[in-house]
Length: 329
Image 1 (tube, rainbow, N blue to C red):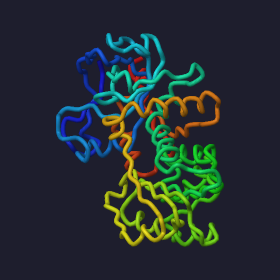
Image 2 (image 1 turned 45 degrees about the horizontal axis):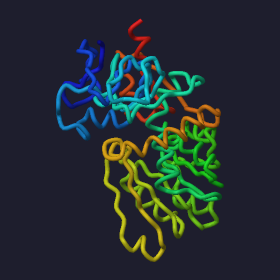
Image 3 (image 1 turned 120 degrees about the horizontal axis):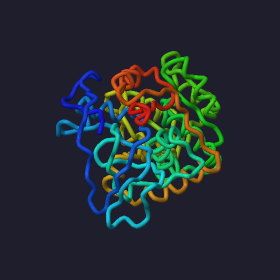
Image 4 (image 1 turned 90 degrees about the vertical axis):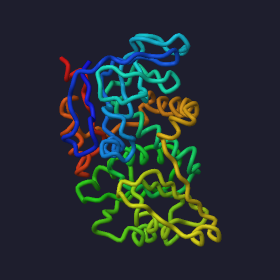
C-alpha cells in the first residue's frame, strides 16, 4: 500500500511517499480502507520529534475516515463494509490503517467522507473540553484562542449549542477574523493588533470570561488569567507557541478559579472508553446538521509536504484534508 512515512525528524521535506506493507490486525482491532484523513498540528510536532520517540520510520496522522474491510474476532459492535471514523494505532497517512475497535465509530449515512475526516480530533476534543472538562453552564461567557483553526471554529459552534451567551475569539491575523465570525463568534480580537485581555474585559463589563480554551500556552496563558472571572476555568490543551505558560498559586485560590489540563492523545491511550459517549453526542449533532466542519484545503496524499508547510505557516483556514483515494485513482 501507499503511505507517507517520516524516516527521521525534521522539516516537512523529510516525509516520503512510499510503498509499505499493509498492516495486520489483532483480535481487538479493525482494518480500514482509508478514504480521507486530516492534518493536525500534532502531526507537525511528531515530525519534529516533539511527540514520537524516534521509532523510524513512522506514519504520521491522528484520525481517519474510511470503510472497514476486516474485523478482529473480539470486535462485536462493528462489521466489514461500515463507514467509520477512527483514531488509528500507527498513523493515518496511508491507504489502509489499523485501529482499535473501541476507537472506531460508525458514521451516519448522511455524513460525507470529507466532513468525517475533518471531524474526529477537532470535534471530539472540542466537546470534551467544553462539556466534560470546563463543564460549561447555560449563559456562561467563553474566550477561545486560535479561533479560526479547526478546533477553534468547531469549539465556537459547540459552545453556542451548549449554551454559551457570549463567545470571544482571538486570531493572529486580521484575515482570519471573518472565519471565526462566520463560525459564530460574537467578537474576534486580533492579538497582534490589540491587547486581548483589556479588550476581553471591556467586552464583559470588566467581569471577565467564565471559560478560556488555551491551545497556545507561553505568555498567552498568563495573560488569559487577567481576564478570567471568579470561579472561571482556564483549560490548557496545547502549546502551539512552543513556550511553556506559567501562573502563580495566588492567581487561583482566593478567586476560586481553576486551571485544568487536557490531552485527547492521553485520553485515547489511558481512557479510550470515555470517548464512546463523546462520539455518540458529536455524531448526533452532525446527523442533525447542527454542527458543521470548516474545511479550507484539500491535498492528495502524495502532497503531504505541501499540506504540512501550509499548517506550519499559520495561514491555513479550517481543516486540511488529505485525499487518499483520489491519490490512488
